[in-house]
Image 1 (tube, rainbow, N blue to C red):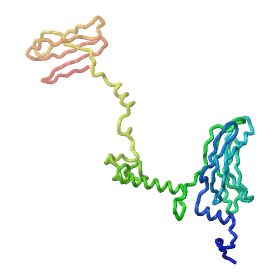
Image 2 (cartoon, rainbow, N blue to C red; image 1 turned 90 degrees about the vertical axis):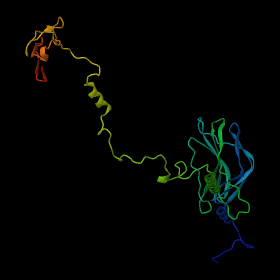
Image 3 (spheres, helix red, strand yellow; image 1 turned 180 degrees about the vertical axis):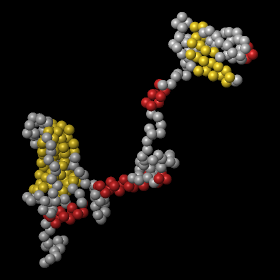
Image 4 (tube, helix red, strand yellow; image 1 turned 180 degrees about the horizontal axis):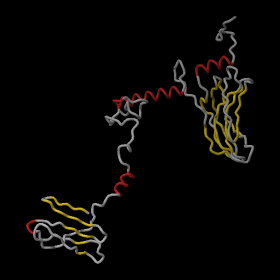
Length: 296
């Protein structure tokens, strides 16, 4: 017969039949209640009574003391407590492990030909003499909602609850939409304080402006705003007529420059002045009309 009904009088319902149905409804593996491990001194642990489900197969743990597997060396290693189901032999056991690097947990589909499935309950550090830093790591299956037709996994419940809280926050104003902190994408009109224009994606400031180094070099070649020049004054002399000349009077013993001071310009007429400096240069000054010419 190609079709068989399992739920009828006299039908043979196998453990695998139950497991497949429960796994479909629960869609999760983990601890339902209890099964909490704790270190009690030395290299021993205690586990509380409890129950759980692995791929639709229910297991029950009685409270007991467990001796942990010791490291093969004198160094402290990583330890683990787990529940292991062998799908081939249909056996289940509490297993402890110790290794520098713990092996990957086996999670084969034992309802469809797989051999091993391991559910971690706790991890710890272990030496030859003591267990330390024990952490309960068992995944807990969320309680089944009362009167629910389908079981919702804890992950889905958490996602739903988070979404509900987001909606509440948006409604009461404590959270805003279209902000960078609360949205995967923000519309352009939802951004405040943005500039109206932008520089091209490819541009260069140094091509248009002097750099600091260039400005320092140029300024180093300029005179300070406060500075002096070697002074030349016209020697005080009386004039007659429209032309004349004067004898230079040196300003110091080194004879490195000459003092010439403005003299009496009879009739507002300037003479032609020639002054020989000690370094061989000649200063020539002449006035033609209102134009004063100076050559050096």
